[in-house]
Image (tube, rainbow, N blue to C red; front, top):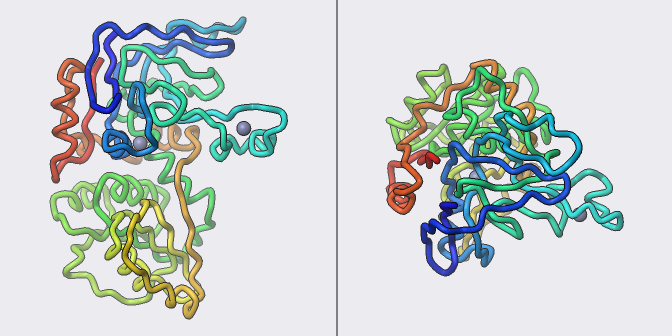
Length: 321
Ligand SMILES: [Zn+2]
Ligand SMILES: [Zn+2]
């Protein structure tokens, strides 16, 4: 089968062996997949991963290795990871699979990813996509679930004022997801064209240069991944407010953390989320991600798609199988 492989370099191969589903796994034929920044980080050596890349996909189940064959023919999206399920594992025992130290993560750790004609995954982490949701929206379920994770971690009160800082994919998806729940959210960024995507769907937006930096927001979501973004986010958070870190800010630079103590700010790390609520939100039609698609490439042009993903103005690049 065709597969986009990373082994010191990124390469498209035509003769990768089609995977065979293990017990309780399904074989999924990929129809559409999304390139994520994590994929790009892996090509720079992140996690030391070798194998098929990719963790965002939609596909059709072709086979199931268990007695229950009901998933065959269904259109599904895979969660990105599953736990070790070792009875001794305290994380798996608490069903906290996403934090299992021996988890398998599609295209990132101990599991071939979805940038191939087929992948396998345990059936319990495959979710059926409602008919109303086209592949081009369903492929956003993983980042959308990650955005909705904030709701799981935090109780956002009706009068709370929320700011999302950063108008990249993550910031846009988070702002759209919060706005769809009638939360008072403002998306702040540096690119008018990107802010407009959210604005068209009713999100309040502002250019950073025009936005007054005051400590008046109950919840601030940092989605820029930059040190200056972290500092600005902190400067926007009300005393006793919550600063949500959605992007990993990797820095060697010294950070002044004193405001966190002085203003008693809660800093909350937030990563992946549950798929069912994200699928329900997509089904409701209250969010539309079509304007986030910068290009759809045939798998044969996957390397070109990766190049496109590196360009500055790109939001989501998709691979068609
Ligand atoms: Zn991703
Ligand atoms: Zn485990």
